[in-house]
Image (cartoon, rainbow, N blue to C red; front, top):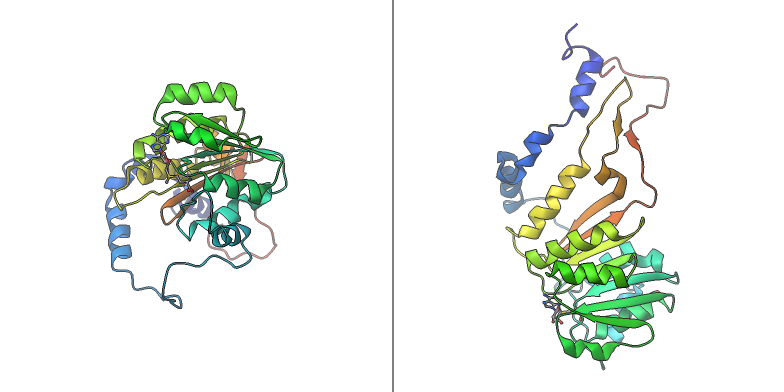
Length: 274
Ligand SMILES: C[S@@+](CC[C@H](N)C(=O)[O-])C[C@H]1O[C@@H](n2cnc3c(N)ncnc32)[C@H](O)[C@@H]1O
């Protein structure tokens, strides 16, 4: 029986990945097909409301933002508040280190203090010297250019293992890519990386993050009737990559898996797929 007609052969084909094909993803007809599909989108619409997304009323960050009508300015897209709360709520009341790139008028630093509590130390990064004025016992301000690798090398000697990094800095793809390349590897297991303000359909940071997504799907070993793949370094380190409008969130695994597998449970099986 040939591999393609044997049930296990068919299953192997089903699980087989073609990483070479994925490497040219952005140039591929499938990428163009997805774009065309999305551009002519005719899916079931959600009930529409006039205006921008309103975060959950129970979201403490949104409440803080709405009530913060005076003092240091905060500038955020409204749909970011539910994204933050979804990925960051587990750090509330914990001991942790947060890095926010982009301080501007300092209001977001106060919001993080209120949200996470006194156990979280906040390191703000900005290119503008004036932002030094936002330092206090819970906030350290670092002045530097996020696109400068030497700045991050020095930063890593001063700040060990941030559990949360929010990139709300200059928003150019090169700044975003350098910051991620320099900081994500040094972040500890279970940490969360948020990159904000990724705008435009041809955004280079989107292409960069899509490269990481491709590697998350790598399948380098398959053996036996139950598919088992040795986890690649990226699969061991990264748990998930989330795309939202203008935002990418990357979560690191708390515990690194050595392999990914698909066991079967149950005693009754159809004859096809083996
Ligand atoms: C959008 S504002 C930050 C808003 C703030 N996080 C908030 O929520 O209100 C962007 C900040 O990034 C800073 N910035 C711009 N380019 C930068 C760079 N290359 N390195 C570090 N900070 C930069 C700007 O000075 C500005 O204060």
